[in-house]
Image 1 (tube, one colour):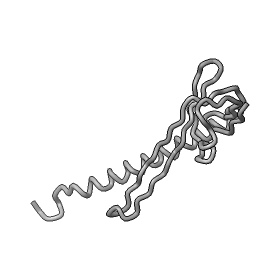
Image 2: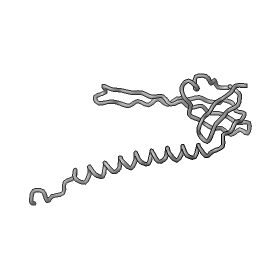
Image 3: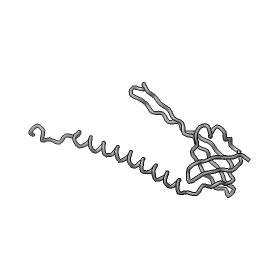
Image 4: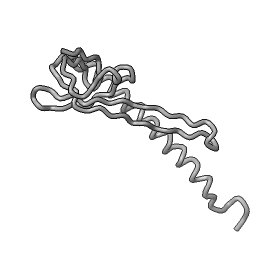
Length: 120
């Protein structure tokens, strides 16, 4: 074999991995934009609901050599409507802290976007 004419794994693997990561990021952004647009076009609804469940999702991102660890918490509340249907919505931390399982009231939402909850 002549130098420079052989199969170099990195010359193929690096562009493929770069394109794969780029495609994943682009698809994630596209999915979020489509959901945002769908929520904007959904009607704003106010319905009687009850808080039936609360949960959190804590994620940890490790920095280089575990030097810059970061954590983030996502808050979710499941509401049950008078019909028996349930819907889980993502909330901000300060809104999550105000709700307790068993609370009844008027839920305001638009698509999958939580807008508020007024206790009765």
